[in-house]
Length: 213
Image 1 (cartoon, rainbow, N blue to C red):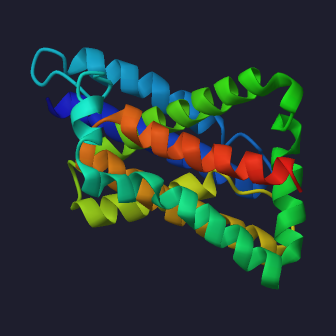
Image 2 (tube, one colour):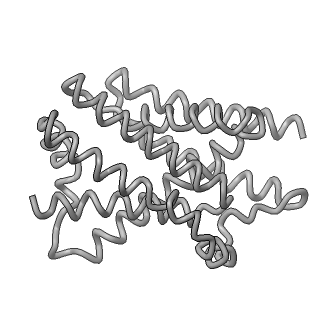
């Protein structure tokens, strides 16, 4: 058991190192997602006999959505993105240009199905890596609040890009907040599909808004 915990610690450390590589000009933050997915699969196999992982269970999606109080948390990232855009439009228009540039390659009404599929895969992948593996493992070592904060901090670091300090800081702040919200959804449901739905709808909302700008 201790050997398994040591392996998870090494795996989490690898995700941290790759995330921080962005600060040194190595744009490999996305590799942290690949690592997280890989370690998630390994953890499911390793823990199967002792505590089967039901975080990808489709059976619990329906019961979770019957909990109306959970809807607020699921759609909070979408509302946060709306607030982010309105605030930036008023006080930091450079951020709008930055975000359009970051998402512009995905905006294509001619390939709407491919766009939706891509957003869904990206959201699910990030949720498996950062919530299903990293946050889950970290929460076995820390209380949930510090686990949420640390996971979200690293998640935002993994999205760091070079650019105007104010714009990048603003971007990373809202990425951090949304990551906290995804983490809360996962903590409340222990279901990656639900947090991925929250993540997907928030990202899709941004794409739809910018496709008309």
